[in-house]
Amino acid sequence: MTAWDESGTQVIQSGSLGAGIGLPTSDTVLVPMIGVSCIDVEVAGDGKTVRGAYLDWMTSRVVAHPLSAAANAVIPQPFAASAPLQVAEADVERFGTVTATLASEAIRFGASPQSAAFEFGIESVPLLAVLSFEVSTVAIDSPPEVFLNGTSLGPASLTLPDLSDPGYRGEAERLVGPMRFRYTGWVRAQKLIPGQYLRAGANDLRVTGAPGTTDSAMRATQIQLKYLWEKSDYLLQTGP
Image (cartoon, rainbow, N blue to C red; front, side):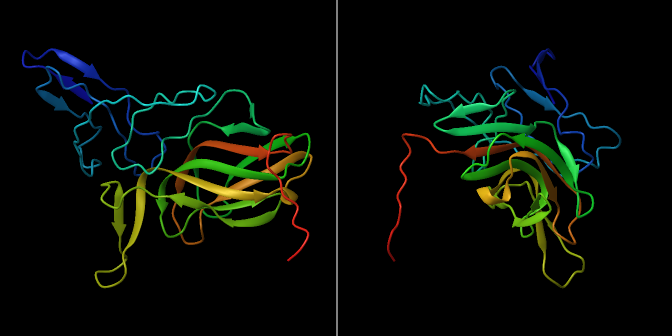
């Protein structure tokens, strides 16, 4: 994507859009509009791979964030239900919770056996864990399924954007019949993992597409492990 002024001078040029995963995708670029009179989008081939373009105006505002938390320098999405996940190069411990990145890059996966596989080690079994990642080109009524150490944990939960988002794509197998929807942008997916499914040492994690779904992609894959912490609030229920 390239923006030009009235004299034909290039004002801004984005990098390559998309993740190079060979799947339908949506992407967002923030363009300073001062002096811009023309925007070009270069597409390989005959341009038929572009489904549509959406333009929205943005404004700035002051945002407060806790000093103990890293500031998220991200481009806000017009319809997003949550901010994009941030990945850290090293494990982070905060208030008795360890956050570890399993993979930052985009990984393509499909229904079993074409799963995305991760192996990670832990020193001790936590009380609770949460797997988080972003998924693209996903059937919104059939979220990816999670397997840990050979046990099925069921489907992940999706945080869906507003239904007016142009990133939704309807698909029907026939003219008369129900239409299923896929979201071609990136949405957050999470799966709660009870501590008893983890084990000290190596753990094998797999994410697959639901049966009957086509390929999707995932990125910013990370896991949070919650351990006993001296200042956490715990309550022992002794009666019904």
